[in-house]
Length: 344
Image 1 (cartoon, rainbow, N blue to C red):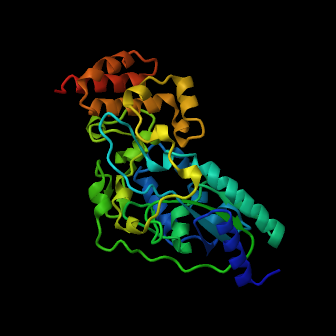
Image 2: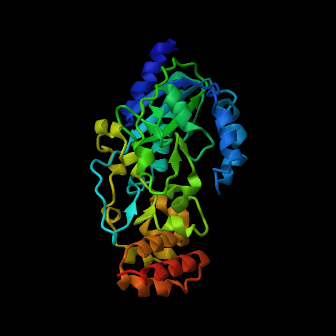
Image 3: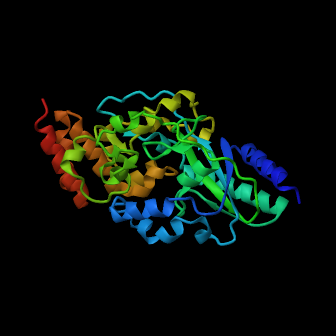
């Protein structure tokens, strides 16, 4: 077997050859302070309806609780930089950059499995992959591995790719040479906190129950009217805190075709989306991460944007959806119709 340094270089070379934008290594021991931070987050109720976070807290805070044989963690980053971002007119739906192309979970998972197979076949040991949905604290691990640091928007920031980096990784039973952690380079900058439309960020902490990304994706029920009025035309996620990060000056547009936006998701018309039934929704968003929230939650989000559009001529559309079989859709439609009745 190759010595540890040579083995580590070989793994990094292979990860880059498979198409990952960056790769770093850290040990499988617990990240200092993570268990305490997670416990405080859950105690405050900031996980909202994300009950799976509480149910997996004991495993989430510790890599070796996931897999006792883990000795090292290979962290990979994939660049999904959008290039220039321009605001859309209020009659067009704003969809988060990460969700405009193929589902990144599928893309990264496929490559990680390839990397894991190659690792075991070439160097022995064993490996287990994770991508976002597994109960793993990817961001603290990625920061300790040197991929970047957790910015004040709580997402990872990379000196090479700014705020546009998907994360994934492999636990391995092999001993590898760890990389140095990345230090925090946010300094006195508060751009992300200032940019948040709902004031969900403060002091490097996030209140998900005010965050548009959480509310449009994870939250299943009705949304507070004061917050809905701040959504604008955002129907799936929100990139405001990421887009204003000064470190994005070093970012580059995604090169992987899988992350390039589908043309029909760049600036879709809100009325067209509002007319989707369940079958139409599932067909339109096939292969997209948007599909997982389901038609009803999605149409709720579209109706919020319609209510914020100022288009009084869209009131009949909102009124028609007041009769939707889904209560959450019907209530959002009622709010949108009432708001449009006050439009000039």
